[in-house]
Length: 132
Image (cartoon, rainbow, N blue to C red; front, side, top):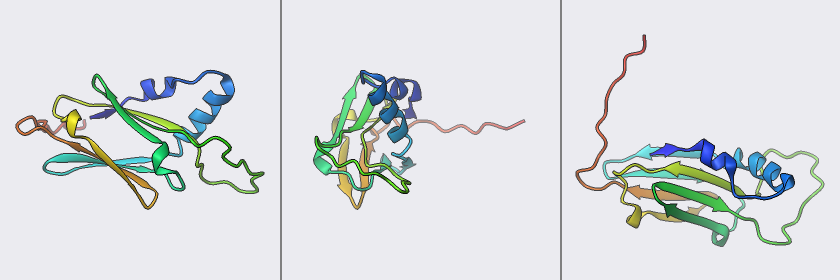
């Protein structure tokens, strides 16, 4: 499974204003991924979001996670701002070891938790590479 920045950076937005907001907020949706014996577990840090406004989809071998804020979302005159609750798009390339039909997600305490089960017998082989 790989993060595909080139696909995510292109987005599907029209107009420079939306593109600017997309790029800025994309950096605010940090993602951590860890592997268990049976899955990859993805943690998308997205505090203050509304669960129903997340959208996850798989097309081909790409997993796309998007968040769209609701219409009429308040825009404050910030004095200080260290995180955004705006929209974002993150795209990840799935290899053939992921069972895309069994991907699940839940939003708990500001973190979108996405579970990507690995197909039995399709686990990726590991390889060590020497740094020279």
